[in-house]
Image (cartoon, rainbow over all chains, first blue to last red; front, side):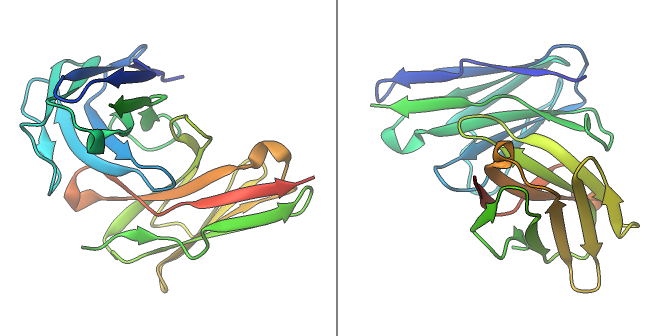
Length: 117
Length: 113
């Protein structure tokens, strides 16, 4: 079945530094990739939608200059949290879409726990 | 804006009993719904989905019911097991908004032995 690999699974960084999170579709080419953030005991909030070779579409309230998304290929999307601050600490999850419904329509990565100190 | 929401934040259920998790949605244009299970520290795991032109769909031990009249979605888990303990989310897709998913608030299911 469709598998999405997200790396790293956890990261601790200092305030002011940047962190890059990778999302790879291992056995399929994803039409679209999505990035979510999830605070403790809360739901997943969509940050942005990215399509290979084009600029990401950010949801309202998400700073595109702070959360840089690069979707250079059909199997790789990256999220870079720039100038991280403690309030950016969260669980970041990517999802890859095959543009279809069913169990493999949307495949999620295992998430990245970011802690900014 | 319109969103998907849930009635119950936490559900405690005895092992072997059936569980019912509810979800209300407000956008009548939603055409596809998915239930996900999320265990602590992991990404969401697909459980079952349903298109808006259906009102019921069954899987292994799970059933999803869709009532478009009252914009209500439910997930029924039969013979709940300890491994079912997790947070459950419903998500909706609106065709006119592309294929992005909007998630509901989540319900934590605790299975008591």
